[in-house]
Length: 233
Image (cartoon, rainbow, N blue to C red; front, side):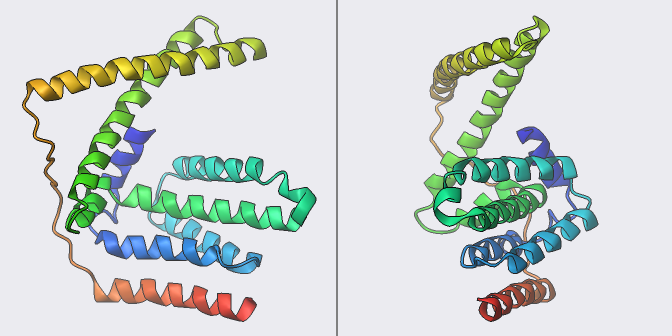
């Protein structure tokens, strides 16, 4: 899935737009949603980003994966709140999680990670953080490939045919993945050392120009959310 997201982000119609514009569009609504306990502003934001996903033809399957992951985590973690704060509070938490998942999926499917790191690397003192993030991204791809191989190997032998087998073999898969990850990191470290790697990674990306028209529209949408937040609360 990580490879697909990376590929789709580079092929997106919005890939050439300045990352700052998309970050402002995505991050500020998430922050504003955290200050409200009313569903209206959250639902407005959800509907807005759904429309954007449809207009720019983003993969709705991947978007649904983000929503299920964030919503599922929020649902499981807020179950105990029902007894203290009521169902309404839990529904608000779930809506915020769904809104956050849709927002982050929009950023992930339209903005290559290299572009964001390229912007961050310009800030003094954060270059090393960007290098670590790039290495972590590649390492996660290797882990994902390893997990897929293990899953297909177990499944081909009927390892997930029953509930007991699913439970047992999922634990085995996690254990083997952890062990293989440690082994793979040793191989990666030896390869890096043998190539005299100096710890610096180049940022290869396009030149971006902030569009005044687009940034005005983005700020206008965020201003609309602020006004809704003030009037509703």
